[in-house]
Length: 222
Length: 160
Image (cartoon, rainbow over all chains, first blue to last red; front, side):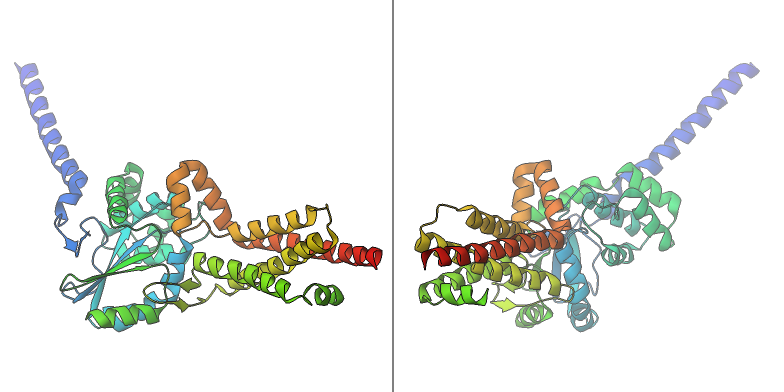
């Protein structure tokens, strides 16, 4: 009798553990369910893109299609972005969404996926910025798995969570969705920007253009 | 050397040819390398860190104009059958042109989309080694220029 009870209680314990594990796995795998799948800016689906940088209610949205290994994206980040942030994003006139067009080398999609692992811990933009500050040549190892983990460590992320996220390839489909969305929007170079205003009017800018161009375009759309 | 330049460019048609080659290289290369943008309006812009790249484009374009024109002159005036030097000039110009052209821009995107992994490897190489490749192109063009001037002076002596 005792033996039967032990087996029975063992089965119940295993069942409980299985249920708890499956709930937690489904929550982590279906993280995209927490995203607003209907989020669009103009004709662009930004549901799987970055979190919005700046005021959600800003009248202008700047969508950047970029690659972490692209040196022109690096140029834009270091030469133009600061002024756009200072004069438009910090003033509430515009916000920014980054959508991956990770096509340069095999480390690009991995770097893009890692940014979403950082997003899980609330540090998407810190990780994004760190990647552009640390950029070196394409596939030279600067954005391999070990370096991505080192970046996460330097930002003080929970390494157990981050490592398992990166190693599992959890966000690969999200990155691929973004690449497909970029192609659908006709982006064939990085960086490509689509600037959208509250009326749905859109303007595309291709390349690492100077601040003066962004100023002219944004001012004409506000 | 200056004498040879004076000799070739005494005929204004060669000045036009050299200028056409220079402009035909510097404008497209500047567009591809994102120093000139055509949309939403035409604007030229050299970002911080892009100075060396732009300078190398200028040098490649100037040397290409000079070397190719001088070789066209050699072929026209002396009816020379030795076309190795113009080949060297074209080779140097081509190398100088492709370096850095295939990175994040539409050409790189098209190459990777069309040729897959092979395109990716080629693009990566050309993007990562843009400056050394352009320097190699300049070395080829400089050598071809030197060889052309030398051969022009020999051909001039023979003919005079």
